[in-house]
Image 1 (tube, rainbow, N blue to C red):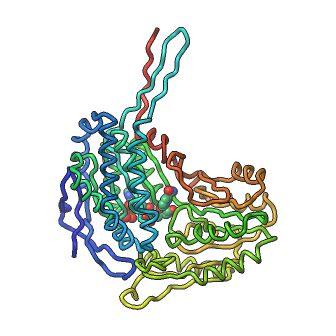
Image 2 (image 1 turned 180 degrees about the vertical axis):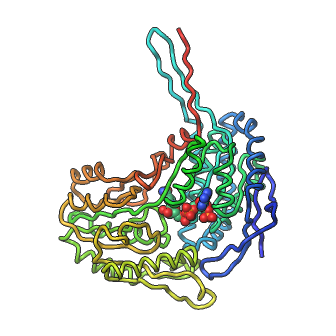
Image 3 (image 1 turned 120 degrees about the vertical axis):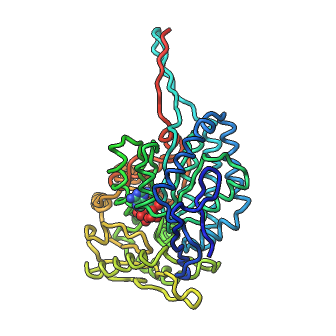
Length: 480
Ligand code: NDP
């Protein structure tokens, strides 16, 4: 079986202890490659390489740094098919999703920050007749980036691209569940002779390799995307060490549908916002609130359409949903379906595993699931499930739906469907979320701030926010 390797100081290296564990293909439920079980000693070597590379990399002109980042972007594009197939195989997502979303967006992330850094100006504040302050924004040194499995290369590149563009050197760990495209990125670095030690990728488990990155005294900042519980653990370690922290965590996002919306557009987008990537996108709208006047019509059409959606192996061009990422995740999602029943919910669609024919008969497939009849504050409606499961809840007034939407500990994103301008703006203003879409979903402009409130995270990624996070401001005053 193929052995994935770490990439440290510009070289593919085995983990020092020589241990590996299985990389499972979700579509088939069997191992297809081996992942390094890296430990603190491997992270130590990666941090040393990054530290040694820092003076050279941060000393490059921004044009030269931008050029290297563009080469990375182009290098992925040149191996597009390989990346698309690998992402779909590693994660279980339909190949067309990897082709249209994951890999193109990873390519864009590098391109965006390669060019963005050319326009990153710092502030000056004149004190009339006294002097002038100017602010330098210096790279931090070595930074740690840790990413999840749902959009593997897309979210990995969303961190490492701004970190490197601003002059930092990186030690990064992709999710152990989906390491393959990060490994392919190392092959791109080899193809283009990317400067050694600037990006070091260490594979392994969160509690060992990830923990060592967070604890290392030389990692000055940690940029993390993942679950809220892991975010808390990381904050407990990193905060007393006074590291900069960016935490992008879980969500339980409301999708609020008013009577006056454009019904057909809302319906086709709601199908995506509920079940794209098997519901494993932190921005999916898993709590659907529908105003009473259109509740029955919505329910009937939504259930009919969802019952017809095709759950299939990822390489099937007709697959609308592929496999969920792992057996344990599939079991977790199914346990929430059982909980929903105990809490008085009615399953309108799905609620079970889907068995495909060989060779996919051991894969992790779930039918898209719609549940109604639950109280807004029950566990099914409060806890993140992160799978193809949505709940339907009717509402009458704006006040009522706002109260229910804001009732969870999370606050990542929200979607509002209405043609009432005043209501749309009022609700967007009142809702607890870092990102609000009105009559749309998942429209992304890389310049905008990205992140959540409450237990959905701390800090913002994207645009200048990311570049500010990965730099330290130093103010200098000069007397006239
Ligand atoms: P996890 O929190 O389990 O893991 C995320 C990453 O952190 C993985 O690389 C993981 O390694 C690592 N990790 C785990 N424990 C530690 C530790 N103690 N120290 C350092 N690193 C650690 O999340 P998932 O991978 O399960 O991703 C799903 C979650 O991510 C969901 O909650 C989802 O909402 C959230 N998410 C948030 C987004 C946002 O932008 N707000 C976007 C996408 C997802 P390992 O592989 O071993 O687990």
